[in-house]
Length: 486
Image (cartoon, rainbow, N blue to C red; front, top):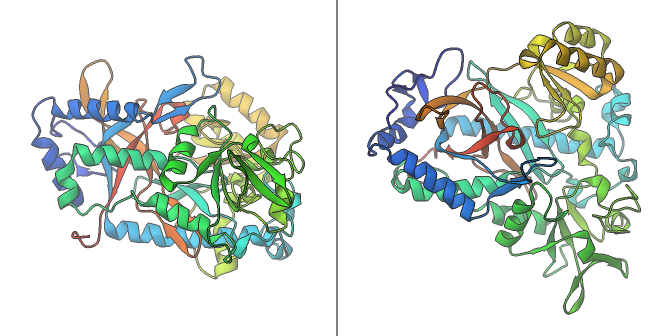
């Protein structure tokens, strides 16, 4: 299969092509390699890659899906390429953002200076679902709250990168990054030898180093565990994968108990003290004594052990206050307030529906905007105004009027596209599909941005929704080295 008939189109930024039959300089080796394949070979490699991921059990769950809960995560064999210079700017911008967000979270649970100085209205924090009053005065190790962050980035028609949202509670997807790369290295081994593509397979070791950094320094061999809600969670494959890759125990709440003032793990040899938890359970469910009393997933008494400093948790409880999409709108002000700098990576322009002026604009322009619920994820609780019916827009307008604090609106961005191998009933072809990018940032001894991230692709024709739960898939992300010999 060749790219001769591939049309990147007008009005969108194509990640691999400048124009028809004009690949970007960094993509030329990839395009030439694909052109060198025999007819039908690219499709065969695509099928082999998908089969390999199936055999590895790379799946996700969809709640309430009548077709069955477990699905294979669709994968496309055409990668996204990010140049070295472009990545350097993204890396710098992400480090700046995470630094400011961490200072913000620590501030709102302590002195609340940013609220007292009127930079952010105090009412927004007080009404944020992710603001946990039991965490006021909490001092996590090193005053670090957001140890693992997945920040969603998009690129508009002019090539400008924007931050779409921050995910600071239990961001998922890194396992797909690692498994996608494993498959791609067996699919195009020669390109990895010649193009200088930065490796990604060392993420588990970086994650483990981050977790171990949280343990008290006097402990010679701290015990780290991954806490999962269980096999029915949408990201259970990832929980088990990361535990296995780090060489630590994967546990559920029922495997843990508070005893003698510490969190302990039940083992065949008796109780064993746990020092660090990488939790993949939302805050509300982690301790029924401190938060939701109906939770069967957590551990009674865990929060008190945590608050006393005898346990470290990543991410720290309470980080969800910065996941709130209304609070997201104020991150540029946070960067200015705490760091005295302008944001390197801008936010998507955002209208706050609790503001009467913004709300009036949103209600008058619902057909042009994307409206999101403040605390939903996965593409749920969202209105794509341009694709919605008048009845759907009218119903959503009532939701906004009833709960204005719960909604934001943003313009419909012209998300960048990448060539994607699709078959829509007329045989396989290369078609431009919209993508976003979720890099992963670790905050331990220092802030580390893992090269690349999860490129999610909207596989439905014309769709801008990339979430796996809404029919999206993924691609490998190739970040090129500044020095090809790296």
